[in-house]
Length: 170
Image (cartoon, rainbow, N blue to C red; front, side, top):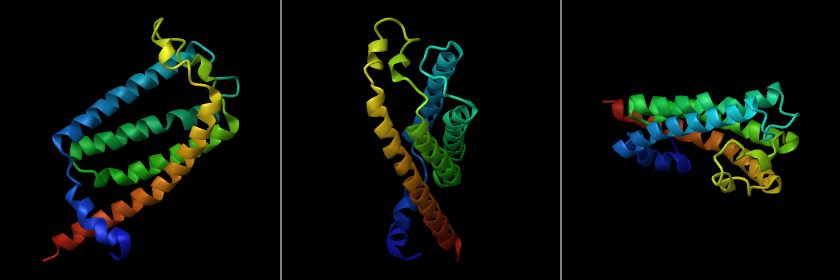
């Protein structure tokens, strides 16, 4: 493989195996994402106001779909001990996150003034300061960044896969 990706494929290949700390990070990510998701589901069920009336089925699908996909990425890395086998799912997740961010940028069915409503008194100040006016541009940047990440992740996947194939040849 030629070009920048080809020149770096050996470096990515050498970093494909996850260290113990990275594998522990996958466990932490699964737990943290699960807890945040449960909090957001509770916020939706309790109708705190974080999810506005324009948060419909499409928005719910786009909002929650990255959760099982992201957990799947972490599980693949945890079980295999390698990064590359998870990259196709990671690229798919980046597509979903990119589309979701751009969709939410346009529709914006959230009210961040209510994000901390279910937190214990005193802890809500950690998130209640976040205004919607800051979140919208972050969604735009995140959406565009995620769509770029699809390309980048896919290219790394191909480069590392080619490196494995090349090293396996006698």
